[in-house]
Image 1 (spheres, rainbow, N blue to C red):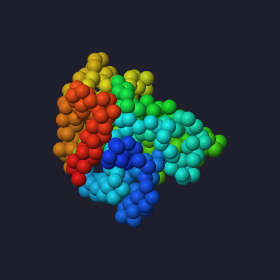
Image 2: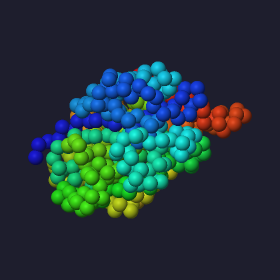
Image 3: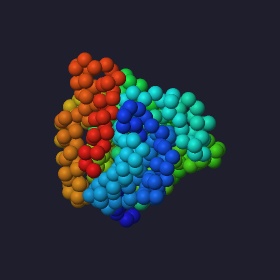
Image 4: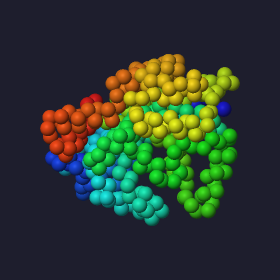
Length: 375
């Protein structure tokens, strides 16, 4: 078995908004063509016509990923501006109504409409997917099992969807609630081997239930297209540097688990029922409440969890050259996620006597500003 290279790739989904009304806007004629001419296959349409997806190249380091992600975000912003639009990187638009958002006219998306019916129509959501290069299939299956423990931590740190159709949902990540209505989502099953994983997938593909494993939408999965593990649980991050911090933590955690394996050790694989409870806590509270430490048997406040996580992967972050990016999660844990900031913006406007519509518009303005912070 060759040592993994732990290369990294980041996929982000953005929403297009009208700069004047702050409402969702469908991609106008020529918008995507212009982007493809500049970015090639690093940009593509998404399920809804108001969405666009980008993907970085395979990056050896987080620094390389930063350069590419900045270029991609800048290009989307520049082309959107020509049409009076702006991208935002939030998992849900604060006040849009999903019933007015049309799906992209592609066979894959027409198929989703047919197969998933009303469940698919509500998918006005955006995520952040991080690929980490692990070429050995057996190792991917083994690390997927162990990595599942940390998925709630990543969701909590990424939460950017507190509002849905102009209402505060009370959740930090409402996106997960929408996505979980689909089949084949949530925490992955525990597989004892790569062969067992393939056997399960083959049951569905052989019957024609799904065409291939890309229709399996677990929180983490072995990529069907690339020799990677793909972490999919995270909300998309308005701030580019937060997205890079989460990618660096993904990369470092997987290296840490591999390092344990090299020493004939491993992270304990807890019952999915228990990990699912932490997943719910992350979905509900983000970083404002703690997660359960099953070994200690207590709920640990998230700032303390972040400190522990940074210490846990310190050696790996140093080896991968992403120490500063990993340390950024302490700032997120201490000051709050995008969900925290969005609520603060809305509360500030409403306190000033403005109506809820003005508060939601102000939230969109803040998301536009955060998208462009590091460009």
